[in-house]
Each structure stands twice: as C-alpha cells, then as structure tokens.
Image (tube, rainbow, N blue to C red; front, side, top):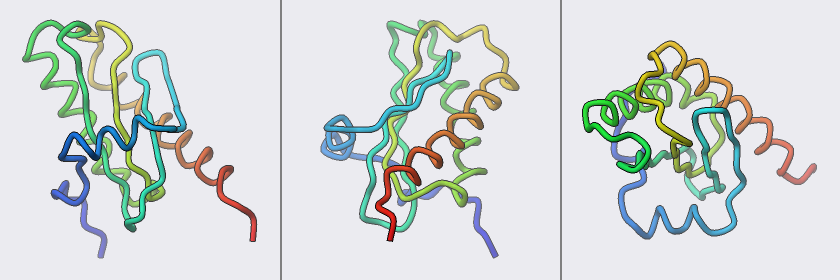
Length: 123
C-alpha cells in the first residue's frame, strides 16, 4: 500500500543538499513557480522550498504557499522520478488562490517527469 506521508527522507534538509541542486540542474517553470531539479541516488524524490521574503512579504502567505506545495508534492510523490528539487516563487503570488497553486504545481510535476525521462539514456 502506498504511503502519502511527508517524512524527512522526502525533504532537502541541509545547505549542502540545496547547493547540490543549484549546480547544473534542469529547470521547469510556470507563471508562478520555478523548480530546479537534479537526479539523486535514492529511490524517491526530495523537495526543498525557498519562498523569499522579497517575493512574498507576509509570513502567513509564505506559509500557505509552502503548505500547498508540500501537500501537492505529498500527493504526487509516487509519480515523480528520483530527483532533488528546489521550488522557488517567481513573484508576489500571495493573492493567488490555493486551487490555482495546486493546478500550476500539477503541471510542473508532469513536466519534471517528461524532462527526466527524456534525459535518461535509452537502453
């Protein structure tokens, strides 16, 4: 049975893990988000969230965006390839409703899967 938990193994935790993703990533983007991805050696995807105060001023809005991103990731984790991801916002998206955030993230998850499969060598 599939588990939809968001455990420590599914998160980027240290600055070194984030820095690793920033070095030669492949990038997927939507009007609201940019996600940097890099293949990892584990069997599951991992995500790190960076919501800058410069982009989204109020902590309550940053936390809501992070909650939506974690929830969407948690529900789609079994469809994603084994990559490390860093999610960033493009601008002030504090007034965007949760349904739109989830819709944008779903599109990005499918883009990540397509790009990852295209980059894998054919055997």
